[in-house]
Length: 169
Image (cartoon, rainbow, N blue to C red):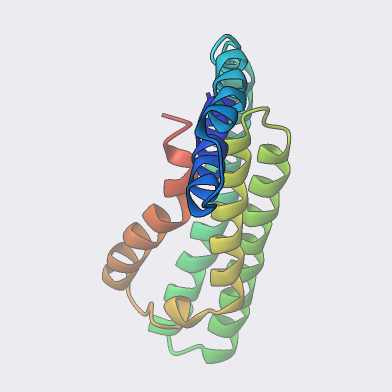
C-alpha cells in the first residue's frame, strides 16, 4: 500500500515537473508513471498480527509490573510529604523517577522487536514521552496528596501510553 502511494506521489512530481517545461512531450511522461503504479498494487500488505500480539503481551507485563513499582514509589512519596519527612519524600521521588525511566527503557526494548514499523515507532514515541517525564519531574513534585495523584497521573498515563494503545487494544 505504501509503495502504491509513493508511486502515485512520484508520478505526481514527475507530471508537475514536466508541466513546468515548455517543450515537454506529455505522452513521453505519462508512460513511465503508469508503469510505476501497476506493480505496486499487486503486492499484498504484510500481516503483523501474531507479532503484534506477542509484543503487546510483553508490554502488558511492563505496564503491570514496572508502572506498579512507579505507583508504589509515588505512594511512599505522598506518605512522606504528608508526614513532613522532606528527605524521605525526595528519596521516594527519585525512586519514582528511576522506575519511570525503567518503564521507558522496557517499552523501547519490547517494541524494538515489533515487525510492524508503526508499532515500533509508537513504542519509541511512548518511551520518549516517559523518559522526558522521568527527567523533568515537575508533575511529580506537584503531587502532594492522593487527590493530586489521581488528577495528575490519569492524564499523564494517557499521554504516555496513547501511542502504543492503538496497537495493543
